[in-house]
Image (cartoon, rainbow, N blue to C red):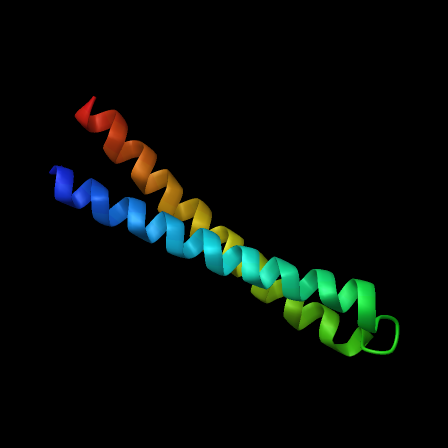
Length: 71
């Protein structure tokens, strides 16, 4: 894997981490500010948060594997 490939993976990890953080903030806001009234939204927001965190984990695992490969 080239240095450019690793740079792209790092960029993807940063992007997915930011998106996961934003989704986590949405979940936090729901829990802190809108429950119990907005309980119907909980499963959807929780699922979206899970998927965003999973996307970050997958991107991070690819980056770690690529870095180990080139080390």
